[in-house]
Length: 263
Image 1 (tube, rainbow, N blue to C red):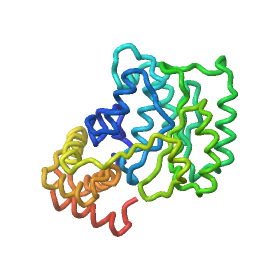
Image 2: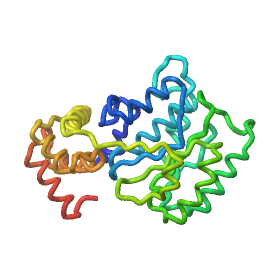
Image 3: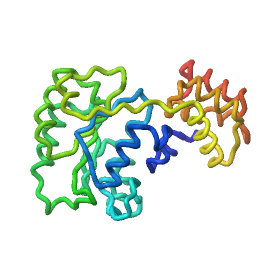
Image 4: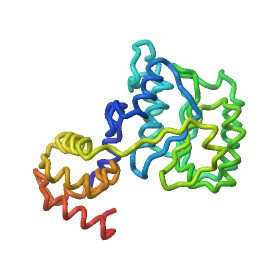
């Protein structure tokens, strides 16, 4: 079974399911198109809502060498873009030579993360080939899973800068108030059902199949309009449909996942 959530992870801001006119995405892309990278950022969204995809695009655009066209999109062709894209295939990614990295806070102790950040701040520029914005971007995924006492350990780093930190936090997570106060908080809302239907149909078409609008809408709504959950369920629905995915195939996939059968 093909994992559509991985296969179709957005490679451009325009591919984010929420759309470029979503206030959070619009604000970030407008700044990036002007060569501005504000922060540190604290990005909130429900689990599977697209915050990791958003942050990766920020890192790619900050490193991209194509900075003279006024675009917010990474070119995906220059050396920094291709190097970071390859490196992201094997998470977690420590900051690479072009200045982007991401760390899963559920797998790396807070003390180790802080040591890494201090080491990166000490690295001389001769060991670093900066991209277009000449800023290192480090995404701390699942930051909200850290204890409040561990979160407080990052206060000094957030105040002193040196590395552009992006804290990825689920809506359900508790965040230390002092940490939040030192960040630009951005809430990435879930896409609408209509936006989900558009992307479901786009992806199914790319797979050489079809899906009815009713089946796509049913999938999106039952998955709470969460992009990752919707795509994982869509992957299962394709098992039950050879050419066209209908309501029956969609419901079988939903039932299978709700009973914990699907991987």
